[in-house]
Image (cartoon, rainbow, N blue to C red; front, top):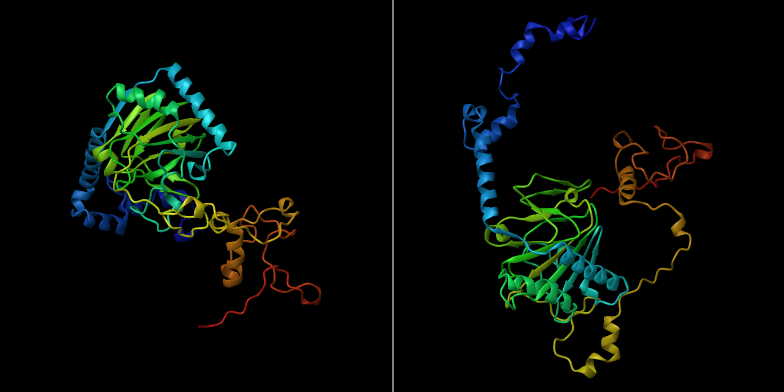
Length: 383
């Protein structure tokens, strides 16, 4: 006999008592406490929430925001296929020169599936910041990145000036972002305290899209639906200003980069933009005003040398499986947590320490009471 006195599950499903639990036709399924809190946060009664007023207001707000984003965007299909091919050849040459180590250190910034090349002016961002958060970005000291290549002036900037997209002499910073399939750039606003408006970008190699108002989550990477989705064609110029540049984030999603894509971003730095003082690669602050004799001194050159580890290289390290951070965390948890709360020993794909199968084992066993687990026991002190 099944639980509840029913011999067959079909009888339970057809029970008249279940009709009382079903919501009326067309009504949203009841979600208890979550429904109540959402209605209270929106300042609505339960009836107003049930009839869709909350969702209607939310959709109207997003549509209004999308209209404001659209008003701050200007797009022009400016470069022909032949002109794109000519510029793309120059971009390939930049990549080649970077691989040969010709450029200065701060000109090239490499990331998985995306390389960035700064010209004219470069700035710190993301993990490079000493203190995280908006407004902490700083321009590099003058001369830390290479000058804008002549072909950028001749093939790109001049054409934009001729079509009155930007005024002459506007651009003093050019950045080339080179994306591989699946590459992305997370949601951000180009630092307002660093760059003037507008922000101008020109796309090459393939079509893509620019998304506004997305939120990123990682491990695995996930991206929310955008407030506004903007297709970006090869050879097109995109100009961001007003709300689209200052009041909402923009990003490139991984799913929108299906082929290699490069974009040249042209901007002007503010005259009052904060700039790093001259710093060595080791992070020591150096005097701003130094004579050429002082700059060439042995003491100054010693400061510029990168720190090297004194740890000796292990010649067999390359032939052993790597221990991922998740495995290290698993080992730490197995020491601290009681046995009944531990995860399975085979929880990670990098499991290689034990040759035996997964399963519950005794803490001690075998001949001589040898511990079966490789994890070292730690005596915890009460503080």
